[in-house]
Image 1 (cartoon, rainbow, N blue to C red):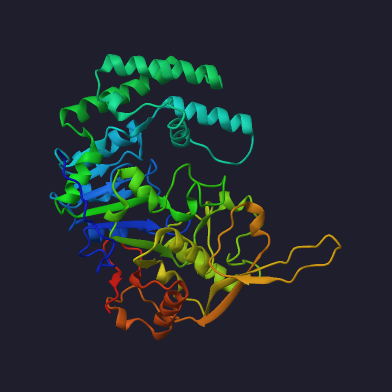
Image 2 (cartoon, rainbow, N blue to C red):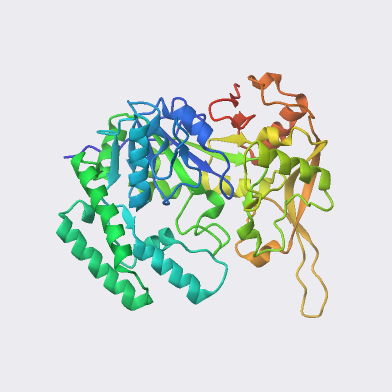
Length: 464
């Protein structure tokens, strides 16, 4: 009978992931915080590199020749001793997974006996993409829905396709695929051409052949729990970010899946006690999708291009040139402690990794949003209730944003290029003061900072 980890404890002396048996790295804001640099550093010393949620990665992992991996965990590319697991909470896109495996081969990276995919993971097909398109047409609004969202939605409706079905014989899988197709066509009146069906099935059949050949479809729940019991080291990466969680984000402008610590348990099938270290990743520039901002007048800590034009232009230049952020798609703000405190409440962080620090190099002053002022409600007799100041909240619905006014603390900038600094103690005093102010606000230690946009450089560990 399988031995499972019965005597796990939440008490851990490790808050930087360097000696942890089970470390989770997750974003704390709205995406593209810059998790990859830390994951690259940590994964070489772990036995297993895992994904537990979402589908295509928000921040793709980059291979040595510059190709992007959209489905596979970071560890598959770094160390031959590190094996990778895609958990049951991940939505599998056959085309992207085939592309990733091909890219590994082109880079001379062997994945045989190093990659395992949960037989419980669900598959995204062209049918799901068609359903998503149909829903967008019916709703006629700006809430984005894609095939991954549709595949996720059909899981509880018991109308999905699992990797276990793909590991069966091809005729059985194809018959199941056709039944799902008929159901979706009747429910959503989708129009799928035979050419599209053939292309989809071709991708899936090719994926089936290579996965079955190397026995990559496994019961990863049993496998991973046994590895935890055996004392193997497990590194887990989040696909998205905490404030995009379908339950804890600003619904419905969220992802279709859970992105916080609790989802690790359901997305990998491991006990909560196994999670020893949780490192949250925070960008000091509070990057946020403009598609989200289309639904609100503003978000509280947004840098105002009219009243803060000098700071706005400086940050715009740094983010677009150094970090290649698409500013047609993303906007940015001052460091905001409120969503980070909220994310800490949800995730129980062990420490924080602070990114994009050099984007602030040219600023004369740096504003940190400490609290929100909430406009008092209007009584029935027309009188107004007093305004109140609150900390650590994140709005539940869009209209809540309109009542929030940021309360800032202004710090002096450092006006110095920090991209070549290799030791925390050599950072400008004003830079260290800002880091300490953030720590004081969140009440969590910052263990790592990033001072440049290089993939393999500029990651400083704070020793104390």
